[in-house]
Image 1 (cartoon, rainbow, N blue to C red):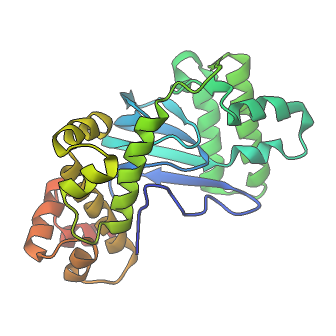
Image 2: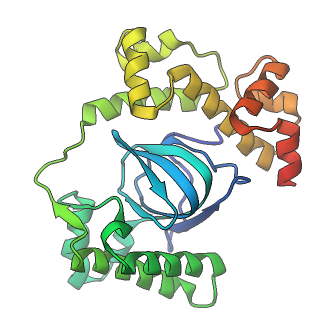
Length: 283
């Protein structure tokens, strides 16, 4: 069973209210953001510390107070550093329903004719206030929060348009072929991480020789392919330890480690604690 997928398959919110809220701390199983993509849009709000975030082929460090806009379909992931952050993942299309006044603008965003700025808070004092209110509404879930949440999303988009926190584009400026190659490799890892995977396997999927593939993969993810594979397996192990009543040995085997002691050593390398200590912290 896959606990984390490079293309997120979990439902964001519900059918009638496709908006999900995640508050992430060091104890959250998804604290380290593995590289993935989803068809929904996402707002990230950095509360404490910093976050090294890769969007497509660009990596930047974001600080406390930053509000980040992540469009649909883009490969993203990264590493928090002493960070607490919020994520709101939502279906932008829900704001188009029976709303003729806003239809064209939202349609142009969804069809990438309008490219919203990544760092929304850079030139706006209002965006952080709206993002805070949005997250508070979703976290508290007071009566009527569904109305308030949608209102804050409309305020967010309206402020983006009013303050011109976007640019109009004629064509997609991402190198789609390059990103598709990485998506194929990450897809293979998400489907097969519990099995034996070699560098040659991954290079063949990418259509490159192993040496070039290593450099190419690292330029996109800031990790070597094998380092990323182990990192991904440990993230899956954290998810399993948090959600399943399984022994450390069972978790190790399920996540692709044939040797329990090596699993514990690798877990400590990425998390700074042992699996047993992680479980105690969680419960």
